[in-house]
Image (cartoon, rainbow, N blue to C red; front, top):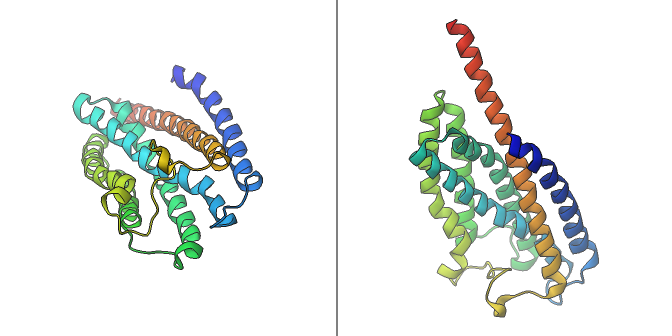
Length: 230
C-alpha cells in the first residue's frame, strides 16, 4: 500500500498525458493512408486496446500462478482487480475492429481465426468475473478462477498469434512486429507507440487503484467477522 501511494499518482498523470498525446496526434495530425484513407486512424485506439486485452490476461495468469503456488492473497486480488479492465479493453477492441472491418472487408464481423479467438477470450473474461461473484468463499473463488485463467490463456495466445497460425483469415498481420518487413511508417508508428504506452500506464494506474480497493474490502470483511465473533 505504501508503494502504490507513490506509484499511483505518477502512473495516472503519465497515462493521461501519453493517451491524450498519442490519440490526438494519431487522429488529427497523421496523414490518411493511401489505401484505407482516414479509416486507418482507428489503429491508434484499436491496436492498444487489443494488445492490452491480451496482456492483461497474461498478467492475470502470472498472478493466478502465484496464488496457486504461494497462496499470496494480494496476487489473487490483483487478478480479480484486473479482470474488469481486461474485459473493457476486449470490448473496445471488438467494437473498433468492427468499425474498421466494415469499410475494409465489407462486413462488421467475420468468423476469422483471430476475431473468433478474441470473442472466446471475451467469454472467458466474462466467466472469470462471474465466477468471482458467484462463490462466497474467497479462497475457493481464487482457486477456481485461477484454474479458469490457466485454461483461458490458450485463447489469449491464439488471439495474439492466430494470424500466424492460419494464413487464410481476413485479419491482417501484426501492426507492430520485430520483423522490419511488417513495420508501419514512422508517421503512424510513433503516435501508436505513445498511445500504447499511455494505455499501459492507464492499466497500471487502474489495477493499482482497484487492488487497493480489494485489499481494503477484504480487511473490512475480516474486521466485521471479528466483531461478530466477539
